[in-house]
Length: 284
Image 1: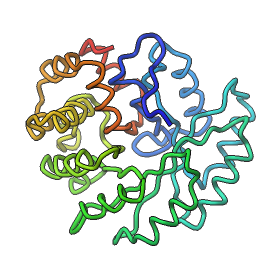
Image 2 (image 1 turned 90 degrees about the horizontal axis):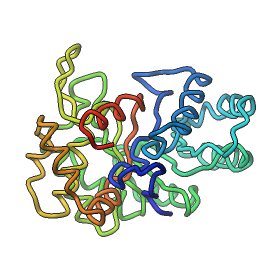
Image 3 (image 1 turned 90 degrees about the vertical axis):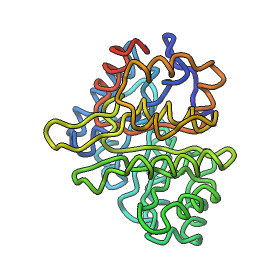
Image 4 (image 1 turned 120 degrees about the horizontal axis):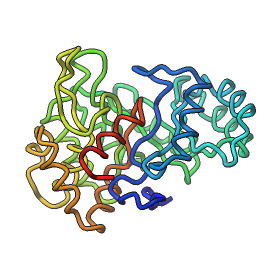
């Protein structure tokens, strides 16, 4: 499966299919009908090439299908299935999706790993999820976290890094993100996904919570530096949007595609915010 197909309307390869739609999840928590209407509107809009898959919990599949029957989409909805029913519920959920192929196209399956990232568990993930579907597994940060990331990669799945949340401890440090990038980039052919609190392009302090948020553009530039031997931590720490944008813009197309083979996509509660930031930085 090609990870970063060229987007329509001249979307640069660095941003093609970058932003997955997590409107159903916190902090947005948008109702299913509104989330789907907005998603299809974005899919038909000027920046459709930036939009990736639609994220939906396995437990909400019946609701999703009911709404899609009402909408009658011209093409199946590209779906990432978020497993919130335990590993044992994966085969049934995938079977439901595959039975409605006129409505849904399963592209990705995502799930949290058990605390020890057990190898038998990872093998079952590989058995349950079809080969042409991307498997994304999130090891918990903590003692032995990077060993878990390595195990996920060795079993053919993408590791996921959670970049924030409702509490300060949900935000990984710059060193933790840099170490994660080093492990993934050092594994030939490996890709990762990011999620949570990457609403904006550039690292910033949230005025309401006081938490420092990582920026998705910082992650892209840091990924590029990982591949070229540059200063990864400096890229992650930077709050200079213009400098980050200039560096991203200067990447040759092969380098940009290599970055996106490493950094597969990230989940955002709002599609409008990242697109607006990229527009302000003159990257779209």
